Length: 591
Image (cartoon, rainbow, N blue to C red):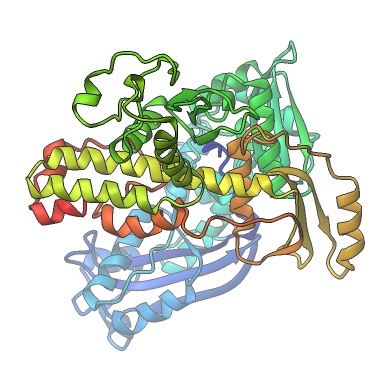
């Protein structure tokens, strides 16, 4: 999956803002109290409600504060205390985004009051209109960003008076004008507002027109240069909104800004469902290999471990699978992971590790592994073809259907190493076992889907219609939707009749689709609410396969680190070996 396709969220017109202003006895929340709270709730330019109350701060109001705000000790003498007012305000602002002019000041006082009272702070998002104005307005428009200045310059209907509700109402007008100005920067959603920096490059500004003709529909988009070369491929729930975000200041990735500068047009591919968009994105990236995409460009570079077809088979790393009835383990994302899985198998089963093609009729000298009892020396004739075939069958069974014997053997080795305090060797064996189990579980899931001639699957959509997918031998052959209230069967029959014809040639589980596409389909199939409409063939994983062993081993092996976890989204972390390995022997036995 592309990490650069985070979808935009709620449009600004749908966000509920609570514009708040406080009057206080001083400038520090640690030593001063609140004397008045004023708040206005707005959404889409309409006022939904107002809140205003004086607050007894429990202390004397300094004379200069009384002169500034007009709030005297006599006025707050009978006012409620903050322990009564704060819960009312929090209920009024529930589910909203707080807005204030110089927000750290007002929000800081509210947080301090909540902490003092032992009231959990809801964790509101906040917007600072003063900070926003500094980024939107030039010095020619506003000499400073004080609320009184902005209210005058932006022609607010209410002038601030240093009273909470009047200042909050003035801030509402300022906020609305600033939001209108932000539209000129291409900021239309709350997420764009949060990341707005006001620094849009000239190249981004000039390319805004590229999003003009795009539909508000799910699909895939391709940025292309003047020669028609695809620069970048992404997917979106809303094509127009997503592409438009590339030309706003919310886009801060330097590579993307560089890409936008040389882009000439954007080609959309409208899709029926999000699953279709995900799959089409992967296919287009693999086909065009865009220079500005980082992931999924070279699925053909996946590494497999092959159990060769010969009198004395061995494990070999290959780049592709063939319809030769061989056993394949993988695919692996790197040669290092493949090597770890091979080492795990060799630790459990004494297969030969030499690369020479052996013949039972032509003996050859044995290597040092035979002397170490790590190979039965079939090269010298010490092991017959039938005896060696038993070892091969054990490996093939572990890869394809039942991994219990191999896993048990490796766990026993890990425990023995830990008992003699060879913790580093035990840790290496653990990592090799994890590499094997992870790869075998992945391969068995992919193989099960690839063996199934056809799956017709339905999933309830957000509009109470249905998303339909036809999957043949692991490849998404068709996708469509059933409108709300319509009879599903005619739509399903039409989709199946027009679906892509997919023929499996037996060349491994990824013969018809890449591993990434198949895993994308599997994740969608496993979502809650997905229903099987039709199954042609058998879709099942082995009862004692690596998937079950992986589930059991997650508790026995992981400890505080999960060796089987999906690490694609993790950042590199420095983890010294001594921190992992210097633990008590019994603890390392299960690690």
